[in-house]
Image (cartoon, rainbow, N blue to C red; front, side, top):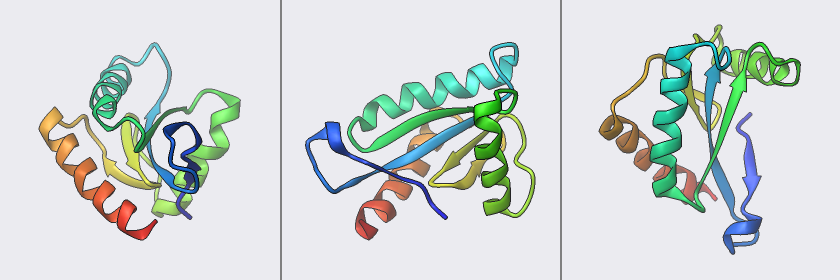
Amino acid sequence: MVERIPKDEAGFPGKKLLVVEVISEGPHCVPCQYAIAAVKHISEFYQGRVEFKVVETKKPEDVARYFDLCRINGAPIPVPAIVIAGKLAFDQIPGPEELRRRLDIALQEWESDA
């Protein structure tokens, strides 16, 4: 199951945003903070097309989402990790160009399906 979020504030009613999630243990995890910063920075170039979220494995409200993502992917997801449209995209922090390339491909597929 792939999560889609209504694109209500972007001015395109009925369209959905591509969800990009960073799996994190929390603020004490330095690699997690690097992953969050990388995705946050790159996702700014995709405003109105990408919804950025952090899933903290130690927050009770995020545990269910983490387990859903593990089930969708068929295995436990490492921390930190980057998930695009519900699928594990990176199990380590990518460079900005690699992240951009992957987002471009995912957005092209996503928007052609919408």
